[in-house]
Length: 538
Image (tube, rainbow, N blue to C red):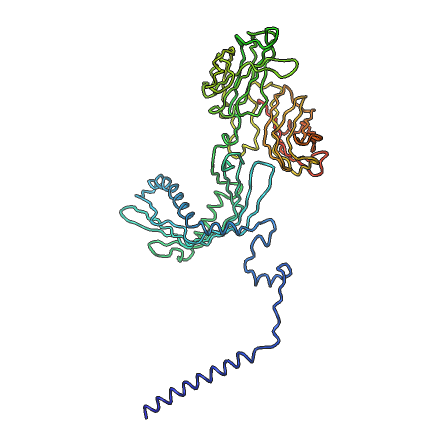
C-alpha cells in the first residue's frame, strides 16, 4: 500500500502542476485588457508641477535656471580620472597637513598624530550645474553647484601619555556652491596667476565619526552640535566676501608689469664714420628695451658732426631686468629717403647694479651676431650713462586688486602732470567690406601709436599698452582711436576704416581708471574695449 500511495502522490502532483500552468497561461494571455492606449509623450515644459516632481524628485539647476550650464562632460571626466585624482589629492592634502600638525601638537601635549588611512573613496563629486560671469576685467568667474556623497575612509591615530586613539571619518556628504575666480588672466601658462575661492552660502556638511570603532554621532545631541560647528567654522573662513587665495604664479612677472625705471644719459659719440657725400654725417641715437612695444626714444640730430655731444637724458620703463636688454642704434639723418644706420650696440640690464650710475663706452657694431666678420670693422663709439632704479615695495602692485588699482607714476614725472596709460584690449563684431585684418591706431596730441595687425578675424585681441608722459592733466582733451583693416593683396582698397571712437579724458583724470567697451562710430555692430589709467606721483 505504501508503494502505491507514493506512486499516486507523484501522479497527483504532476497533474496539479500541469493544470496550474495551463490555467495560468490562459488567464495571462486571454484576460489582458483590449483597450490599452499608447502612453502620451509630452515635453517637460508642458507638464504640471506634481507630474514634474514625480518624474524628477530632484530637478537639476540647469532645468530650473537657464543661467546654469550642464556639466555632464565634466562629471564623466571626473568619473574616469577619480582613481588617480583620489591618490593625488590625498597625497597633496597629507603633505600640507603634516607640517601644520607637527607645529600644533606640542601645544596640546600630544606625542603624534598620523594618518593611518587616507582615501576619498570610489565616488567622485558631481557638478549639478555651473554659472559663468562675463566681466570687462581680466578675470574668469565661475559658480558651480557641487554635490558629493562619498564613501571616504580617513583614519587618524593620535598618541598621548602612552595611549592611542583612532578617529575615523565615514559617510561624508557635502553640498556647496563656491565662487571660483581665476584672476588676473595672463599670457603665460596656465593663463591665470591666482585662484580665489569663496562660498556663496553656508554649505551642507554631513558625516559620521567613529572613535575606537564606536559611532560618536549616535550620542544624543552630539550629531546636530558637531554639524552646526563645522558649518559655522567653514562659513566664518570662506563665506563671501571672505576668500581662500591660492597663488599659481607671480602676477608681476606673469603680467610683465613695470618693476623699475632705466635712466639713460646719452653723453657723446666718437669717431663715427662718414655717410654723406660731402664728408660728414648727421647722427642721432634711438634707444629702447628689447621686447618692449613702446616707441623708441630719440636724441636730437647733430648736423655735420662725427664726434657729437648730446648730454640728453631719457627714462625707459623696465619690466624684467633679468632678461631685458637696452638697445642703442646710431643713425645718419637724411632729409630725403631712408636714414642710414651707422652702428648699434646693447647692454644687458642684469649687468647694472641698482641705484648706481654706470658710465659705459660702447663699440658700435654692424649686427648683434658676435661671429659676424663685419663687426671687426671699426664704426665708432657711443658713451652713455645708465642707472637702473627699481620701484620700492610700496610702489609695487599687490595681491587681488592688482588689475583694479592704478600704479604710481615713475620718478621724475612732472608735479602737475602724470602718465596716461592706454591699454587696447580687444574688439568684436568688426565688419569690413573688402577685408578684415584689423589693427588699432591711437592718435593723441599729434602722436600716433599702432597695435599689431591681426589677420582674418572680426574679433581681434591685442592686449597692447601705450604710455604718454604729460606735463599737465588732459582734462579738456580727447583721444582718437581708429580700427583699420589693411591688405597688401587688395591694390584698389589696401586700407579700410572699420570704425573709430573719440574718448574724452576728463573721466579718467577724475576716476584714475576706466575700463569700458565702446560702440565704434561708422560701424554696424563693432565694439572695442580699452582701459585708461591716469598715474600721478602723489
